[in-house]
Image 1 (cartoon, rainbow, N blue to C red):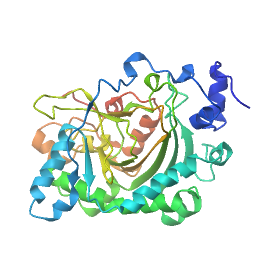
Image 2 (cartoon, one colour; image 1 turned 90 degrees about the horizontal axis):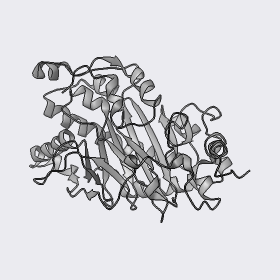
Image 3 (tube, rainbow, N blue to C red; image 1 turned 30 degrees about the vertical axis):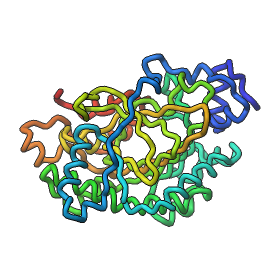
Image 4 (cartoon, one colour; image 1 turned 90 degrees about the vertical axis):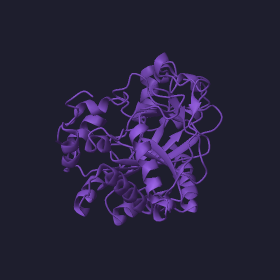
Length: 366
């Protein structure tokens, strides 16, 4: 039954509890954003006031040539100053990237009842969840986004339980990115002066999650956000965005002579490129040298948008804290040690609010 768009409970039940999602609401011919999705003024994204990120993508193939040290420097500088960079020649086949975007559209283009079978509490697997917004029961204003989240445990479980519309190509995308993620982390550890044993590295990136995000057309994009400002909880996030745009990153440090510290810049889509975000875990391990990227997403009134992130995170039982070699160099630890599952529970237990997730681990102010 169609909701009464002027009734908050009716909208919430239709979108969240019944699993129709934001797309289900839009498909009914929605002409204005319901009140539950209107963001406070300070959280809205003014497209006209944002500048565009103008740094070229980093060519990862050059890590194997005479310019290795120069490329290492570019990666480390971006991780230190922005927490974000784009990469090309990453060895993830372009046809896989195109296929995974198409698969995302195919999944979200289904009838609501086909997607709703993966809702929390009814999904055939605890490793597959279809939902909307981030933590809708805790949010003052809902995010204009639907998603399906797929936790990787094994190829067999992925092929058995992930949705048929996207499982094969999502698995291919995940596996094709693994060596790139490991290589980038090795480079960043090298710049820290740290050598990690294989088993330790495996523990830090042992939990992998593929999300497919869908941002339906929005009648009032200036009033909403697709994703509120936040940082990711893990080590590195690999993000594929389509050609529509709408991703904004907050500059941690000045990146030009003119300075951009504290500004939000839009990340223009580059065909064939992947986005790499530093997550909270890597900021903690580096004792604050590398910065997790605070980012958010704007909606659009012209086209529905998809993005497909791969979150590489520690295993839940992994101990996390500043690496001893880094603390010895710095002379003080800025973060305490904890078991990663504690961080996950804290992260998913609250609405997005910038980088406040790091307060859980921080013990000294910078």
